[in-house]
Image 1 (cartoon, rainbow, N blue to C red):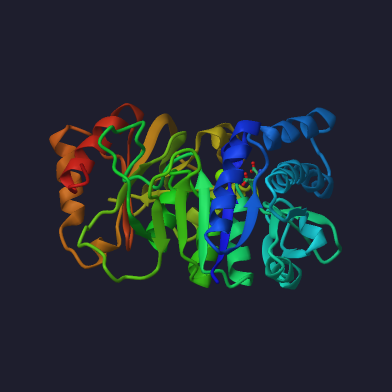
Image 2 (image 1 turned 180 degrees about the vertical axis):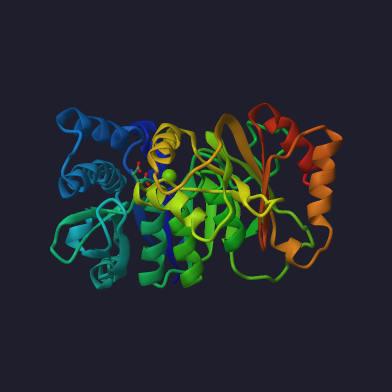
Length: 403
Ligand code: ASP
Ligand code: MG
């Protein structure tokens, strides 16, 4: 008998009608003769609403209480699912994470699952029951409720699949899979049948919001194959996997883009050891995430320019931190809010030369100016002007034969 973990995201349980649809999906997996365990997210909008409420009470809401508050959304959706399954004659009950328990470590709102005491769930499934478990949460060693970060129910599903030694893990969501690029930005985007963990990690952290990045990391570490599918329409989805068998020789798997980037250039800083560290130290202390960084080679050996990107919402704070920074001197500071990062991703580029050239050439053919470049083994990113995003995606999609 197979064991299958099913996860339903917020929109897949976003209304009573959709919950009924989820119940049908769960029942069809059960009737297929499988052990089925379910992780559910809160109904869409609920968690956001709880965040708002906490802010109305305090701008400095206690971190443990914040998690305790945010975790409530999942209790409702899980009970509704279990009640619905009971109604059609199936054995099911809901479980809150502390009742199992799901043990986590790490800070509130950013905890990671360490262990799931799966025996109680396995016994229940042996009796034919379907456990419905709250995603996104656990408890810590002081028995306080923790949450796994927004979108964290993906990680709950993957870790449950690990501790149940499940044969399959299916993530039901509102899109029918992972696409070569955002279909809203490029009509010719196509569904990807199989994608490697590393590629998915790049796609997930670069702005394709289908899966929470840490959950993909968990899947990779534990070698859990994940299927991403729509709960709205019956269609094959995307398989996220580590196995290299049966792969086509597609070089580039997908193209992603970010929004809300900002670029900062510090002109004429002293070219001496420790300067970059002095610039970035206050930013890191203030939890400002720096993404792309370039430092020009200084011509006279005395001065250099440093350019880096951050999220636009951090721009004001960053500007202030640089201006207050007594450890650095510079001639000029400039900002650009209207920039975006476009990246091509694919494990195929490790073994294929000439990809960088083809990317730059394709962008040049559309007269798209590249401001900053960064690369990793399986990714090339360029920073371009916001207004060129669609054009860039279209030309790259075509160049790398994804159309
Ligand atoms: N309900 C949580 C959130 O909105 C967890 C999740 O949806 O995965 O972030
Ligand atoms: Mg989600």
